[in-house]
Amino acid sequence: SAVKTYNFDVQVKNISRLCHAKPMVTVNGMYPGPTIYVREGDRLRINVTNHAQYNMSIHWHGLKQYRNGWADGPAYITQCPVQTGQSYTYDMNVTEQRGTLWWHAHIFWLRATVYGAIVIMPKQGIPYPFPQPNSEFNLILGEWWNDDVEEIVKQGRKLGLPPKMSDAHTINGKPGPLFPCWEKHTYAIEFEQGKTYLLRIINAALNDELFFAISGHSMTVVEIDAVYTKPFSTESILITPGQTTNVLVRANQAAGRYFMAARAFMDAGLPIDNRTAIAILQYKGIPNTVIPSLPQLPDLNDSSTALTYNAKLKSLNSPRFPCNVPLKVDRHLFYTIGLGVNPCPTCQNGTQLTASLNNITFVMPQVGLLQAHFLSLKGVFTADFPDRPPMPFNYTGATFTNLQTTLSKLPRVSKIAFNSTVELVLQDTNLLSVESHPFHLHGYNFFVVGTGIGNFDPKKDPAKYNLVDPPERNTVGVPTGGWTAIRFRADNPGVWFMHCHLELHTGWGLKMAFVVEDGPDKDHAVRSPPKDLPQC
Ligand code: C2O
Image 1 (cartoon, protein in one colour):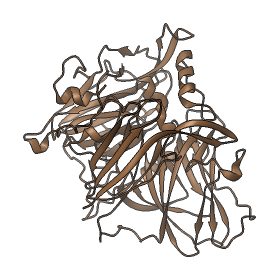
Image 2: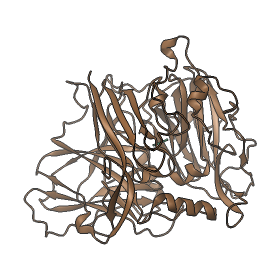
Image 3: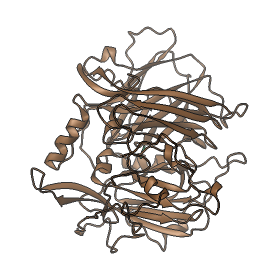
Image 4: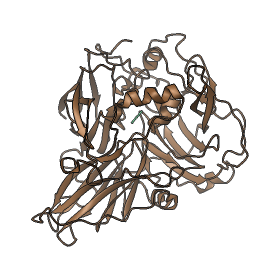
């Protein structure tokens, strides 16, 4: 195995889209940032130097970071931020993972502009478990705001309201032909007739689940969140913020030009959305003058396509890549997801929107939780996050139950015994409004053993779980007005953040942390922190 080193210079750069230029935070002046190429088994060292005016941290979304939360990146959870003028080297080992992941800033809303792809190639000599593609492309879906995002967020906070939506979706940072100044800002790829391509699709958007489709071409899904799946063919994919999806596409259509499009899926949202991003797929030798046609995308609120699509995702579960879903559960957790309105004396209307898990709005600590745990510091967090909500109610029913969210003085975390098997049911509620929430767990992959609409029924639903080949991933969309059950083995000691990957909701407090205790010896315990770990 090799050591791969990258230098990330966090710097402000003028970037323009939609005929609007603005200074924004980037890595190495690039938008999206550089792609990390690494091979399974490699050691990866990324030197981050912060030359921006904001304190900064970067998360390697989906890398398991065994015993090594120090390199995970969420600010105030596993590290203090890297301050302006300072550096920190993220030092990590890439083990037992291969596929597409991504990295992004993990503080405030800076990930709006600070993100990039991670490509983990299989070990030398180990082929993919699907037809070898002739070539590949990364497609990172994102969002563009004409104005400074941190300013927009500040404004929203003052009003106690959601900050304004982005002005466009993007593919590799480019919105495409539906937007002004598109000639300079349309991403394009070239296909050669008869060849097979691997598209590595990443949803780096802040607040939107997205449908993605290509006109004239179907896609074969082969991997999600860097885990191989049973291949299946589809006309469109659904991808939530945080997720990645690898598809194979064959150049088997009439040589021409085709559109690839990413559009919001908002089942509880607005009836129209005019932010659809478009990129071009062009066969070799075809002139730029041919006008492509738009792909058939599911409707904005097509939750039935979303559910059907998700139901097709299955782990490959082959002898080489078995599915190790825990069959027996040591610890049962049930978390309700609620939105709400809390008093806010400093907000313009005297109230602000908020979000909670089991009625608890997570408060951020002042120092890194992992340091506090490692050094047994007192007074930083309390390990009393409840395993279930304060009272059962008709979670998704029409009866409005007013559960005022509670703010604690210290962040509340849940302690998990080393190597125990955990089942967590995430239950959406009608508190304020039912909505879909993409939940991401740091430090682990989990198995999505079940999902349904309405209230989870602990008597009937577990009998319907898929305990053979459930999809394994790091981010899962909990359906609007429904529930999702995940399982994982807590074999990675440390402090691991779990949150909704809609930045809006994360900011409102839809997050918590697990403290997974050390194992029996020092090879199963959190390793010592690196010397250059940033201090608060
Ligand atoms: Cu992709 Cu905690 O984030």
